[in-house]
Length: 165
Image (cartoon, rainbow, N blue to C red; front, side):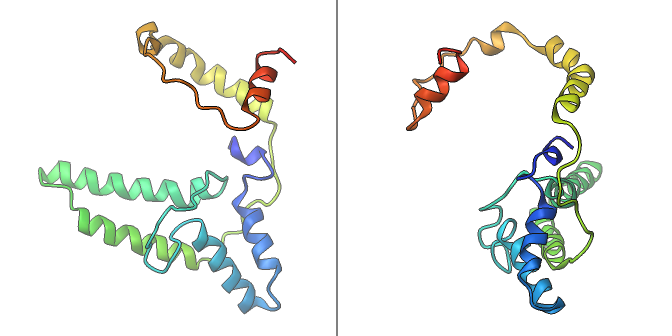
């Protein structure tokens, strides 16, 4: 829901943009397949799966959540049968889902942002903030930090964040 408030975090826009280049429905479907594939499997059999993964609205709910659900389904089966996790069967089922997902041309996903990020963050903080703050311990953060590696322009950003500019 949170990423859906941002215009550059929408799977629907990515797909709509790809489809818009098609001269006909068949070409638009092919372009959608390529748009889906490049951010998920990156090849017909997931040769470098998740190489260009994104945390986009639509992708989280329609792709990553079902993958995690499948993992927990296999994990639950292993625990209930007191057997080892069947990694080969899981990978086969996962690839089947991923390939099927890449061939979809529906559902139509939102291509425009929706919701107010500030209101949403306030709602999340109200609901989850007390639990997070309740479980925070000072010792969790008492870890020596490695020296910072600064990227070009990071000093300017750091100064802005610290209110020095």
